[in-house]
Image (cartoon, one colour):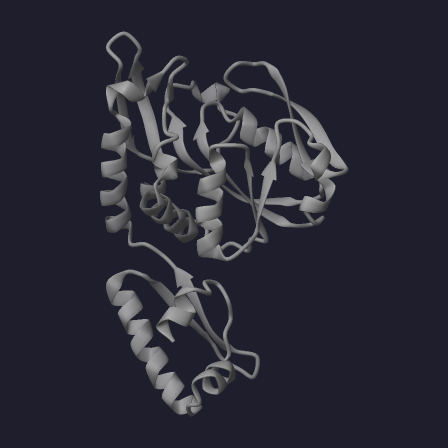
Length: 263
C-alpha cells in the first residue's frame, strides 16, 4: 500500500479500491493507512489526507520539512558558489546540476510543498533548462507539463506566439505555445531555472492570458539579487536560492537560500 501511494501522489484512492486490490476488509485497510500516515509524518515524507464520505478516500501529498529543505539548499548554494560557475552577464552555470536525479527530486518536492495547497492543472516552463525542474515538480504534484518554445515548430501545429521584452537585456524576443497544449481556463504553475528581472516569466504570463488561463503560482530555482527592485517585473514568486553578489574579476559569487525559507 505504501508503494502504491508513493507512486500516485495527489491522487484520491478510495478504501474500496484498496480493499479490492489487497482482498482485505476496509477496517483492516483503515488501520494500515493510519500506520502509514504516522510513518509518513515521522519521516517527513509528506501528508496522507483522508476524505470522508462515499466519494472519499486517501490522498498522498509529497512534502519536505523546511529544516531538511534548508540543509539541502545550503549544500546546493555552496556548489553554485564555485568560481568556475560564474558566467558573463551575472549568470551561473547550472546545466550539470539540473541533470542530477537526486537534486531534481529534492527540488521537485520543495516546489510541491510550496504549492501543495493551490489548485493547479498544469505546470508551464520555457525551453530548455527549466524542463527538468518542471517535470520533477510535476512528478510530485501528478500533473502534466507544457513547454513554451522560443520559436514555433511545425510539429507543434497551430500555435499562439507573442513578443515580450527581456527584463534584463531589454531586447524583444518571441515565445510560442501550441494551441492544443493548454486548455482554456487552466490554472498554471510556472517553473523556471533562473530569474533576473523576470521578463521571461512575465512573457509566459502574457501568453497564458491568450489562453484565458490563470497563474496559480511562480517558482524559480535561483533568482538574481543584483536587480534593482524597480526593475523587477514580479513580486509574487517562490525562489529556492538567491544569487546576491557576483564579482566577474575574481569569479566569486554569493548564493543564499531564497524566499522559500522566509515565508
